[in-house]
Image (cartoon, rainbow, N blue to C red; front, side, top):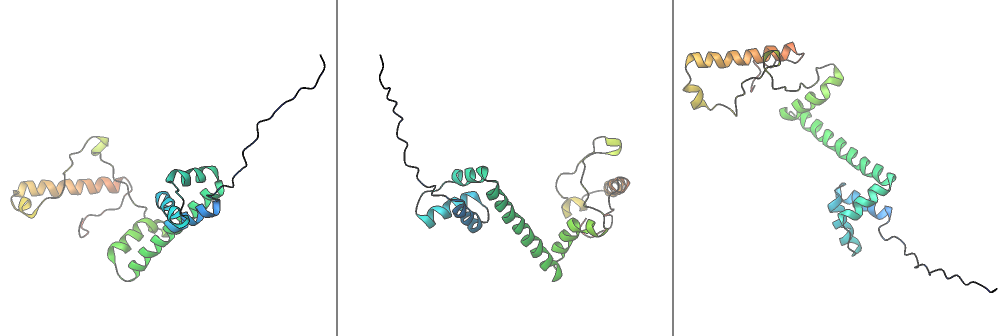
Amino acid sequence: MTGTVRITVPAQKAHRPKFWTDDRIKQGLRASGNNLSKAAKWLSRTYGISCTRKTVDRALMDNPELRAYAEEIDAQHFDNARQTIINHAEIGNLPAATLFCKYEGHKHGYPPPRSTQRSGSHGGSMELLEGELTREEIRNMSNEELHELVEKGRHADKMIVAQGGVSDWGLPGL
């Protein structure tokens, strides 16, 4: 039997252009400061079509260029925060100056910020005092208890220095 074979191919749906284009996602990221939920809300309000956080997240996962754009927004936020700290330090804000020196000082020859490790001498456990002592609690301490407390502080400071940290003994507020 000879004849023709007819093959039918299902018709493809007409491809709709993607509504949430990379440029629109970038606008949302910029307007929201790279907060994905806020970007989705901003896009929904701006364009009048529902956009979810998942839509924005999926766009970022699918496109390395969008991810780089989002990372650049984060880097700009860091630069702005750093500049704010510098501005406050320049006008005499001591906590801002301290924070800046703590995290930027090592670039200028000062010791890096120390990490606090909870261990006693020779790596053993140490007794931790929870919270701060009130004036009343200190007033009610005997001379022997006060002496013991001061000695614990001196010992802790020596251990910090022995590990390469900076002594904070005698600094106000510490």
